[in-house]
Image 1 (tube, rainbow, N blue to C red):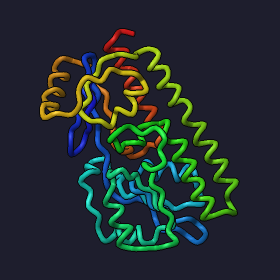
Image 2 (tube, helix red, strand yellow):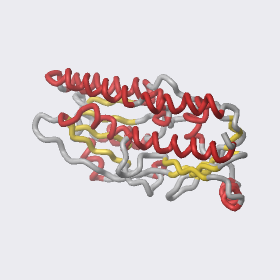
Image 3 (cartoon, rainbow, N blue to C red):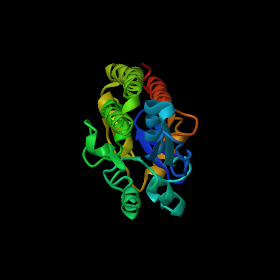
Image 4 (cartoon, rainbow, N blue to C red):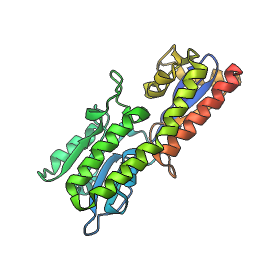
Length: 267
């Protein structure tokens, strides 16, 4: 198997049986300033922006800073426009764990004691060691979504019941994803794979895949060798592609993974 990112940087994950290509997501701004009575939210990454939209509904206006799937998030550099957006935010959601340290600089540049900041990496309850890609751990998302909901209720207590209902809807929608991981684990535990980027450990680990390698200088050749050997390829993105929700993004990747495993193993 082989996993790599599509875009500015390629990070393959290679397996003895199939190949996934890991695409990287990236930067850009979406969203508009909040209207009167609407919470102005800035999300460092678009997957958090999507989650807060689902939780806040019409009561939030969300700007996602990293939203262009063709630029490496690790290479992002803030600008004056982004700084202005952050300075106006009532709620800021960042990943933390040194993944988006540029956000800390933006927050420091516009101190605001009334601004609420939520760092997902500080509250995720299924973190892997030295691995900041916590959003790939679907079992992290209920805790993160609950924390976001609590912040929204703090900023807009009048609509607390709406936020609670949206949270229930969101957490329920994660169940098919968690069930998919359970099903893949039951069928493919122990299947040997090679990772060239640690982001996917958040799914290979609960599925029980046997990870043999991590990123090295020869991963591009591994990608080519896998392609030439007609090993099945699955594409996964570091940040959420345009036109997806968090749930549809993860569901599509897990479905592709399942198909590749079936093709590679004959199961």
